[in-house]
Length: 356
Ligand SMILES: *Cc1c(COP(=O)(O)O)cnc(C)c1O
Image (tube, rainbow, N blue to C red; front, side, top):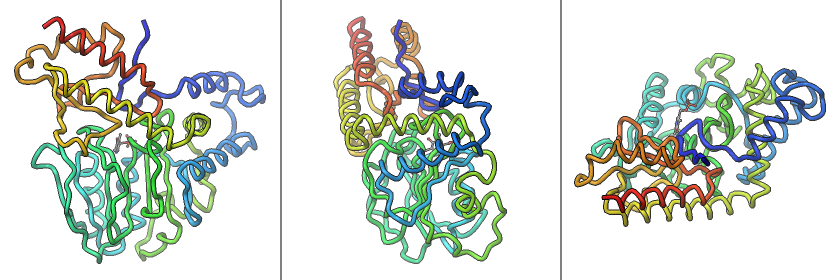
């Protein structure tokens, strides 16, 4: 039976990425060697890194004066590395979930942190609005998509200071205005490639403002000066990212992705709102994530949770279990998720409803 992969991360990748990686695991670029065993300093791998960086710049229309890096340590290391490099005196954080809270915790070890708003009062089921950002902070840090709670900031905010963004789970899902950000970071494993690499887009001018000594490997300048090869990069992961970037470009780029992502989300939220057995955990439609759709059974049908879980899996729906802090279900609809899989999930929900 066909499997439909709704895992939150690591998660679905384009078949193109998987097949081309499989081939390169055996013979990479006609070298007679595996992509797993080739030196990161070889001309073939240097070409991979350079093309991946160039495609990120092209697809996201990154302005001049920014560097693109593929580092390791995940988004979690960026929670520390970002303020280490960019927090001079004071920073503002928008607290929209568990990842945002973790980012804030690390920043507090470095300097003064102001929480401009939080949706913790409602288990992070909405995006705070109308908050003000002090204009004496170095930056506002946001988590653009809340993978766990299913909320998303779908536009680039207008604030009086530069932004830093954890875009781990919605990077490259829509066109965006990179010039509003001093730093964007994203673990590869949600929307980009296999786990291992972390994409960094950093504004060069924003660096070097703090007098705090920065350990060599935590200093973005180290990695910029060494073309993202200060130490061994996660070569296979970066190669997988490159393939996904090529796939994105061949499939119409970010405008096309956004269009399909809107369509997929509309189909699934439409069914959740219609189906008598289910309800979305995010009430405000404008805050609902296009990437991670979180839903639960209505109180009336709550006793069927386990039964739906088993039924969905029997229909080839994989990875639907919600995060333990929200419960219920979560369908992740990243770029690589075809509309057909979303329709198959909707059919499964309708079939289940018809048995009750
Ligand atoms: C998954 C995720 C993280 C954690 O990423 P790691 O690469 O495992 O450190 C951080 N932020 C967001 C928004 C995520 O979705």
